[in-house]
Length: 222
Length: 308
Ligand code: SF4
Ligand code: SF4
Image (cartoon, rainbow over all chains, first blue to last red):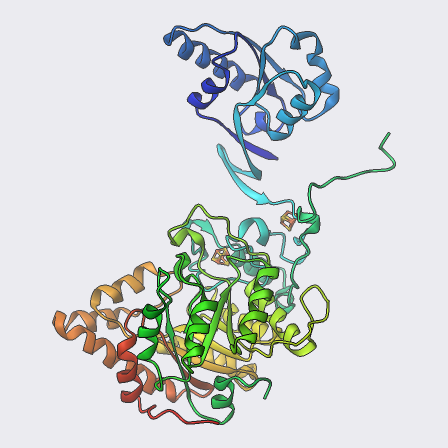
């Protein structure tokens, strides 16, 4: 999923302080799972904002709402009846959700309330780690299911650098060396020989090197 | 011979080659690199010019190499994949060769988090093995990485690094095999303090016949003080400094520690000479270039062969 973290309150206040009526929007998908922008966080941010603004002598009207999916035009349409009563929109969705709103409601200022981070998985309760950089041409089939692009600090494609130590990455003890993991896994699967194949220089076009990416499914596209 | 590289000629003639390194200055003064390089003139066969070593901005390896070349020395251009993409690297390879630089070392480079620009974006368009492959294709096929023809191929003698002390150990020989398969002509190893472990690695190297396919230069570093020894032991990723060596450094008075460090270095070289497959030495005397002459002489590697 896409992970996100709420922005500091001061930065959010700075965006919205000059508006009277704010529409604060959450999203029920990824940002709910990583506890950054779901219904609960919308409520917390609304009261936090109210309190902070009251202290500085301003009052602001905040309307809360959470969409099923903010990156999808179908759900964004739901906002039509409420958009006119807002001077600005504050979104707790990922960057895709924020842009979907900005595109649909061109006349409204839309501000992000979270920092969108990475594509990750949940390691354990409250811990998310990066797993994929969307390189567009997945290598997991040859690297034992562990991604060297997202998980090796140097994006090495042909094995560990000289800094790998006791299974940890040279950048710090809290980071596992992706290539150590890949090697252990290839061994466990009896696929060690695979390691000797040289992975050629990567074509980064599917990974964003050719500009913004797009998927068109002719069978589904209207 | 694949190139006109002086280092290749020394190695091909069967001599134990000696290389050393010179870090370019953190400033725009040519004299600061030339002054250091002077200590190495006539003492070593080629001088590595580091490329933003430890992820700190320095005068470029390319410019430093040209400065040395202009003095008639043999620079060894280091190139890391961290700072530039494949276009920039190929452009530099063409330029360097045009200016008389025909020997290079392909590296991935230390992560930016260790330097003074931790906020920088790491490039890593290609990795070190892919860089080796790219330089070989440029040289042997006269082709750019993208496939187009090069008008005037750069005939580079291609070097790579190997660290026998990093983990996982069992992968280290295979990683060398991969570098050689990609096109590495010579290897400079990480500093060797743990000779037994290096020996074990070399056993694996010989078992795969890799020492016959490329020249292996054993890396050594003289320790200046017990502090430096401790730092390398504890702080530098992928370094293996045995406790006995740190204790040996600690056992002599402070003023005598530099001499002790050099003695250890020379003893290590003597032991390494006995290891089958070692084709020479790479002396990394970081900011201590003036001692390289003493080390080379004490190790019985002076005078250097004069090859035409
Ligand atoms: S190889 Fe590419 S697509 Fe596959 S997990 Fe890694 S970054 Fe994602
Ligand atoms: S230590 Fe491992 S994960 Fe870290 S940069 Fe080196 S190879 Fe990549």
